[in-house]
Length: 108
Image (tube, rainbow, N blue to C red; front, side, top):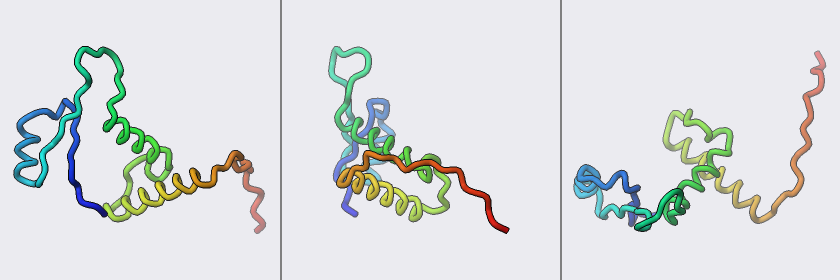
């Protein structure tokens, strides 16, 4: 894993508590992502869009749709698996979805 070199925050977090926490616990300053002056309505913010898009991709994985993991290690492992699956589908796209079949009767 790489080191965190920059911390982005929404304009909601432009307050003294965030700056105090970062000064006490981190070696970097928070950078507040603001919307452009004079804009109204929805605006695509480049850094925030990247994070929100990635969370949406991860949310499509059933195992990651809710946080039910007991440890951070298992949660991190499933995030890595989900991103590997995403990259594999980009490298070898599949235009055909698997055919759904109801399970047949179980022989006793």
